[in-house]
Image 1 (tube, rainbow, N blue to C red):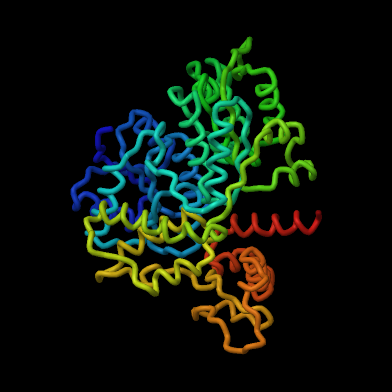
Image 2 (image 1 turned 120 degrees about the vertical axis):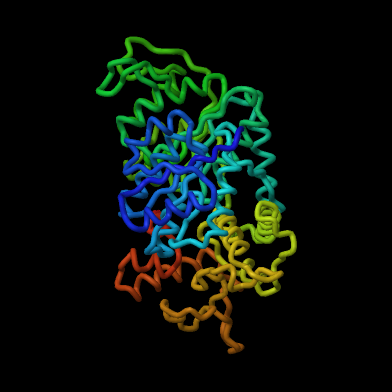
Length: 462
């Protein structure tokens, strides 16, 4: 696909926006500045843009725009930019689909590198982000064997695992090794749009079905006909829409919004979630009949902390990938950096690891990536002592093991998952239950923290 040099800058008129616009022009790119997404949609629909930069004027609004852009224009890279950055904002932006995060003002060489990377690697939405499956973990190898076995059937598959574990990558792999690989693979994020718009995106609509429906539109199911559809974040779909989806799965036909008849379908359906759908169904938050319809073949992807053999393998893979992009073939990991990579709990999983390695290679100024270059929140380092007081949640010191011979380390008889829960609960206690503050201290998004607490609550209720 041809490189697109034009960049769309979205945001309110501010001094920071004007300064960034001038910088983008100075380093050699054409730029369009628009106030909002509605104004920009004709430009985006015409595929005249290779990269979108969204100014985080108001975090809530900006995150909504990031979600909508990455959903509607799948494959188009999005960067978040702000002059008042924080770890919380960076993580939230990347969680919602941003490819990277710019803290303004940005050094011109770094800006040029980032713009070159994303405009030169504008990717075909049918091909994904060019990632390949890479794992030496025994459990992951077992999962891949299962995927290959089920791929040639028509059974629905429910992929569940934490955010960043590679659920969409597994779904694409299943499609690629199936007998439908020559047909389309279509993915849709069920959390990205409100119910009425999601229904139209899934099932399509006819001209005049609602205000703004100026032409017939083929929905994602019909776009994926004879191929595979992935319903990502299926747990976020409303109960009303779940009922309509269940009928589509049962009848193998779709009824476009405003239409007068159904259209036959031949689609392989995959779904993914980071929630415990069985527990949600028991609580009435998800239709039990739909859960069992989707859960014909369940696949659980283990988090990265349960795949220690993969951490350094993937880190080296990302290092090799990014140094080629950056033209830095003379840089390796130092011993202290490798030690931190292995000890860190990786709450953001593979997605977080990839972003950490990319960032470290951008800031490293020697022939080695040091532990400091990784800029990891040491409160997530998996080296905690059982029976000893946890360090203050505001400390920046590493969680070092103590010398007391009677003290038992977390690694002996205690799982990383248990360690993580202790740390999260202790942090919440220290901040009087303030989830936003706790998430900032832990270096995770508020959504990740909420999901963790829901997981603990569901487990305690069982």
